Image (spheres, rainbow, N blue to C red):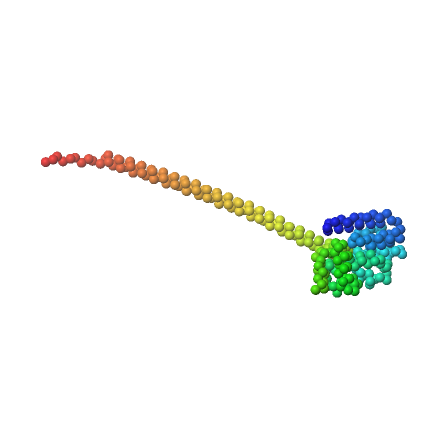
Length: 261
């Protein structure tokens, strides 16, 4: 569902962008701004605002249309009310769109939206009208999901579509991502150093293990050779003792028997 909505947004942006490039007069571009800001399925306007063709509105009698497009990209209904004297009058579809965008802006900062705050921001006079708007114009359109809590008099936001980032927000995000990238590079370097150290220690341990095994083998060989030498010496001693006994028997004089009386 979210993917379908994103694809629809991209299609609409591409459609209005191609139309803007083909237009040649400020009046036509102002009419395009009116059409885009009234479209029921379009909620992103910064890409249109960045089009070089729209800069033709600056300095003309239709420059307020450019300001209005900027308001739809970054502002709220309350912002419009505070600057209505310098902006074009809104059509009912534009009013509804600004109310929807105002809900998205509020949902960026908190997931619990009190009814009193919503009624004030959306210029709604009663709870029934507010809940009808949240259900029919926000949840059914897919830009938010949530739960209406009549007991606590609040709207619990579970999902809200993102709005266009202001230039300051974009710069801040770039700065945050740059810091994150620097931290990640530093962490990666530390990990690589740890891996290199671990590899070095592994090689050292393998060397020590090999030396130990070699010493054990040498000790085994020495013990085995010593055992052979000892056994040979014992055999030699045994043989020598046997020979000596034999020689002693040969040289020992035999006693004569005495004749019987």
